[in-house]
Length: 340
Image (cartoon, rainbow, N blue to C red; front, side, top):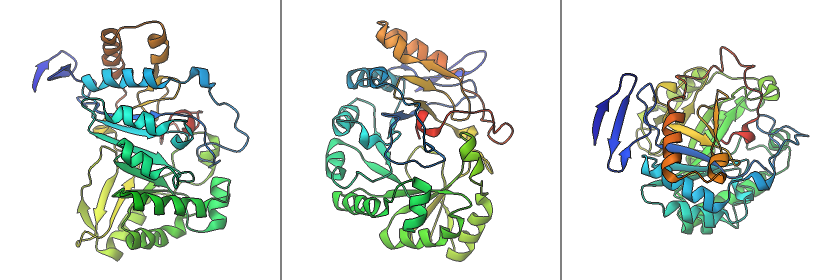
């Protein structure tokens, strides 16, 4: 690999040509791929009750379009793909799509984020298809709290999904807990749950995606981090994966907890990812609204070379950082419309 100089940015040259590098020297090698904007839950920080603004399936990128686009991405250095939604297990044929993505040369890491309500009958097929890692959203271990936060009484189904994931051989399984006023008192209980089952816990600060989420009560994770560090004797550690979490672990290696802190300690300087929505919109930053319509290009007959050129140009528009704290009202779209 070599580096050639440009007046604005460095172009990193890989074996298949220039890799995707933005104006700030960040190499983009991670794609969050939303395969549906539908979900069977109604978590208020993601899809509030009564939301009707879903995309029409005719606008969704089909499997052939997705495979082609990700192949172009992979030639430009894409190495990691995470399947998201909405709830990705609602996309018909998701195991087939996973298999097609896992077979693309250059894709070394395929993971999936899920609420796990439909995971029990699908875990083994996803593992066989090539999904290597799972992130499961679980904000509470109290059935009533789950019902309030998620809009459905689904705790039993989620726990059954986790059992199936364990049986299928997924490891490590990461539990994503969005910490807010309603569940902040449950953090230690979730730690004990994950410690007992060998899961990695990831605590996430509530992002102000839409007015409903902004009303739910942001909780700064830094005091919680210090409290857990003191109680469990945690030390800095690293886990495989290209995401933004900063990890602490027990000295004996039995437990790891990650902190995703877009507000209290943002991670923009090392951002290596972009997001593709189900309708083919490439979002360059979760906290900005700039996007590129790749679906229109594909359906207008753009060549692979033309798509590659557009991807390079798009990445140069990636902002230095989000403005969640400075301008929380800036984004009006909900999380399901962008992908997790």
